[in-house]
Length: 58
Image 1 (cartoon, one colour):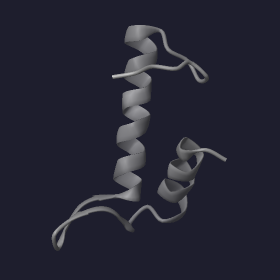
Image 2 (cartoon, helix red, strand yellow):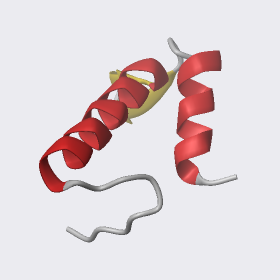
Image 3 (cartoon, rainbow, N blue to C red):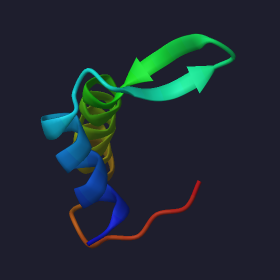
Image 4 (cartoon, one colour):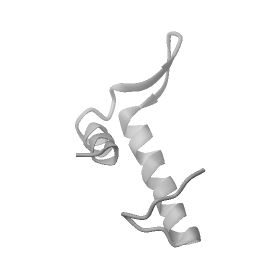
């Protein structure tokens, strides 16, 4: 298991559960966080040619 797998599972099983909270405000659910991570992965794949297993650093 890795972080990507756990996030994907949480997005599927607990999509409406709070994932990020700032003070008393829910800023993202697991479903939204999973969707955003998948969108970012898609952009990294199409624009930079990255694929699962590739390593990148910011």
